[in-house]
Length: 410
Image 1: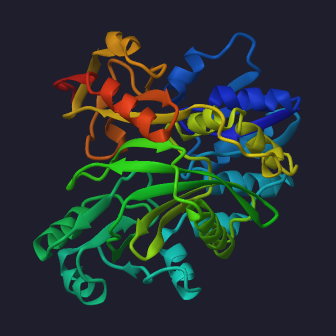
Image 2: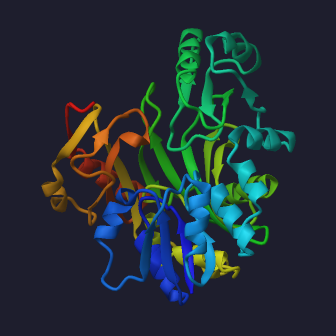
């Protein structure tokens, strides 16, 4: 039998294939771009039970035909936001275990989620949907105030997000938004003051379990991108329990009842406030960090859920006995063509079992540098605590530079 993955995150494919094999199945990846998984495919252990099918996954009919051609499908998984709805629809059409497509559509609309949670007393304010035009500035000032955040309701990878602190910046951002191909419409919300975290959870049948909290360091404004992260964060006594109770209420209210969730929140002076909900395992190297810290392949829980089985991770004794992780994203400093990196040869000199995870390859065009699309690779280090691991990762990554040449193409 086979478990189908409709696209996936850049990292975690090998662990997912191993998890499928542990359940007695092969993994079949449907993808429109193998280069996304270049590092994973190049480093797969020999004999990995993985098949790759090339198909335009943005073409619904072509994807449906490719899916139907896979023999003995037992389940379908998806770890991306972009293909979460199509994966849920395919599961429902095929009678396979999976989430209600309508609940997935809700979570893909950040404005609808914010409105729902505000109506249930779990958010400071509703979303303000606005036209991407400087003429909307007066409405934002009157209803939301400053500082504020403008974002695409269905955006991913920190794309099309603006933090605005004065009227001039607001008008400029609204004008820029009007030039973007927004996927879900523009909305405004109050800026949340405080450090950014994400709660990594697993759920089944309406029950939610907190696996740990990841710290998230973002760029200095005006760029809006993630720079570094560490797991698991240690809180004062009772702090983690309060977060688990809050995130459980948020997920239940939003209609996410089973599977992984990656819930971004700001820990304000008034407690946790939601940034967004992603109904998947965390991106970048979050999955790797979970596996290291918990000492288990957490992707087995993903396969079990796809097969309609309560994940063993729901009932396992959680003990962060493995190493903590810190990782740093290495960005190109300007658009162009990536020719390579300086400093990789020295990573082995740093403590913490430092590893390099490239997200791009020499020859790739880098067109954007102000969001995650400008990331060329990730440096990961281990340590006894998340703080020490992050210090090691930052130290190692400090000597790595992406080398970019001018793009002379059309």
